[in-house]
Length: 124
Image (tube, rainbow, N blue to C red; front, side, top):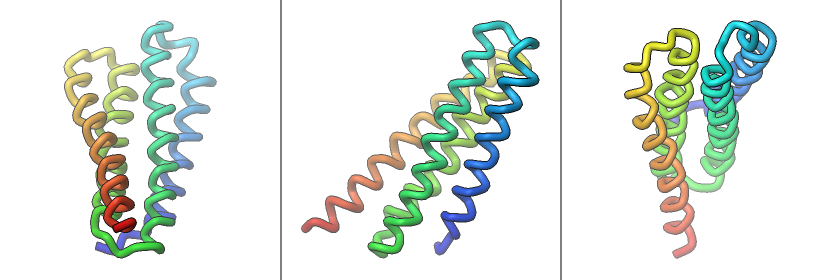
């Protein structure tokens, strides 16, 4: 599994900036303060984990441990589930969408654990 994490991270960062700007300029006046905050939370975690994908790209040049690649997949799918569900929830106000948010959170956590394991194994 040799994904181009720099390209994926770049695309995700572009989307995070675009969605953040869209939220601040187009949605802020249309959403309730609560749902605007929900949208902004999605953007924040989108940024953090898009940046984490650049970390995956760099660590992938340092080691061939498959846990690094799995971490990238976890971060990518975590953004889709966590941030994506918050974006949809904020604009639709359909509360059932929030059921997907914790799945993304668990994927984020799994990604960080996988990176820890990959580096811990590298120290032995």
